[in-house]
Length: 173
Image 1: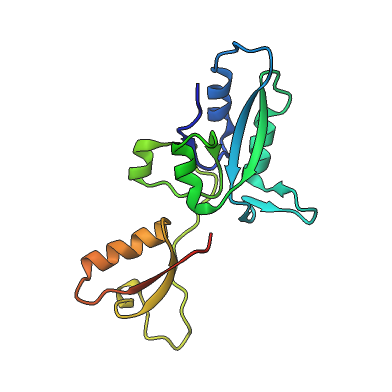
Image 2 (image 1 turned 180 degrees about the vertical axis):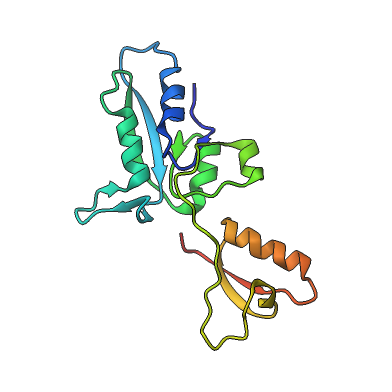
C-alpha cells in the first residue's frame, strides 16, 4: 500500500501509525517510507545547528517509525513547490511542513488533525492608508504561489476586479 495520499502536519501520528501498521508484511526486509519536508519552517521543520533536520513534524515522523520491525523512515528535504507533485508522483509517501488545508486539497489528500493555527494577517507601515483588508485594492504585495494566503488574495481580486491588489509571486518557500 502506498501512503501517497497521506499529507499534512503529521502531528496526530496515530492516523499515520494506523495506516502504516495496516500495510502488508510480505517482505523480510524493511520497507522504506519517505517523509518529505521543506526544512525551513521553524518550529515545524528546520535544520539544527549541526545541519540535521528536526522540528515538530520531523520528530513526530521519527517517533512513529521508531523501533519498527517492518519500516525504515527516510527523511527528505525538498523545495516547497514540489510537495503536492511529489506526492502525486509517489516520490515520497507523506509530508509535513505547516501545510494549510483547503477543501480542494482535502478531496485529494488525507490530512491529520491540525496541530497549529497560523492566522492570516496584513502587516503594513503605521502610516499606511490600509486600515483593513478592504483597503488593499490598488496596492502591491509579494505572495508565495500555492499558499492559502495567495488563494485569499486571488479571491479578493476576483471580487474586486475593478480595483485589485497587484500580486508579485515570489520563489520563496
